[in-house]
Amino acid sequence: MHEQTNEAQGARYSPTSIRATWAGTGSVEDASKALGFSRAKGYDLVRRGEFPCRVLRIGRSTRVVTASLLRVLESGEPEYSGAHTGHCASS
Image (cartoon, rainbow, N blue to C red; front, side):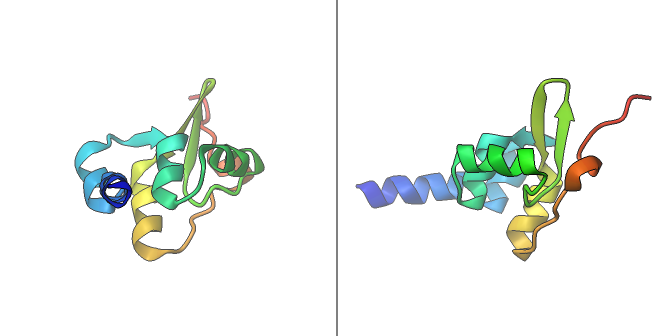
């Protein structure tokens, strides 16, 4: 029974499921689960500017760009957002 739960959760975070259900951005927590690490590790990587895909900071909210997450999941190659490129500039 535990294996079925893990499989169902894995399917929830598959590229196909993400493509079908996520909008333009997703939470750091969900993106971290999709990448196979904990929420705490995800936020730690965001703080260090080392999250493997593009991150946007909008006010006090931090969001992960869905297209970038999908590229990372499909290629296995990180797209580090860097210390400055993940921030939105005011127009």
